[in-house]
Length: 113
Length: 110
Image (spheres, chains in turn purple, brown):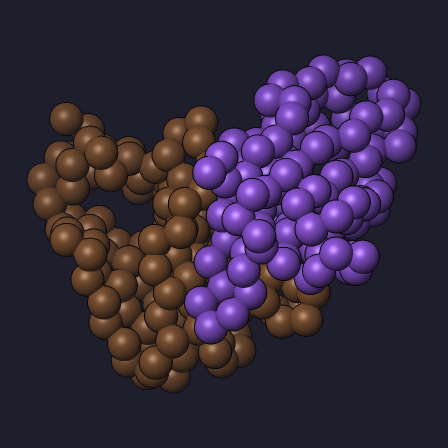
């Protein structure tokens, strides 16, 4: 099992450009998450998907859109990138249950110039 | 919204010294989780605490959940260089929100 995979690993964008971060999991998990991690801010939830076909805003959703394409895949789109979106982005998944352990992907390091 | 505060933000210790990080919430938590993130890596789940006053051990790591279920701690005995990383606590998911603490970055000086 690959667990949670993310592409790309690194990306540099210019202000105003768009891009989609891809995430896939092979653990048959129902729940998937997108976080951003900034120095001193910890991990902040951008969007959450409880199951295929459902998505909910997290703590910091502005400037992002998501698609839960199927049970395996959950993508994050930046329509018009801004320097404030420079961050490390992590995708995670969980089975959802008594112990809702989150399994994280390796992350995407995004720089917006 | 629910906030989980974590202290200290940074901690430098000599190898062999002990280390403790604390997590505090203004509200009662049904459970709390702990994760470790190595430098350049991704968070990895360590443990979940559920019961009031619960204490769990994993080798040199001791996790505690407060009696009031509003605070938690992670204590590492006799740190090693392999303990380097950032330790995060996380409150339970409430609806569509899931909050991590800001993390404690541990540096171990050989």
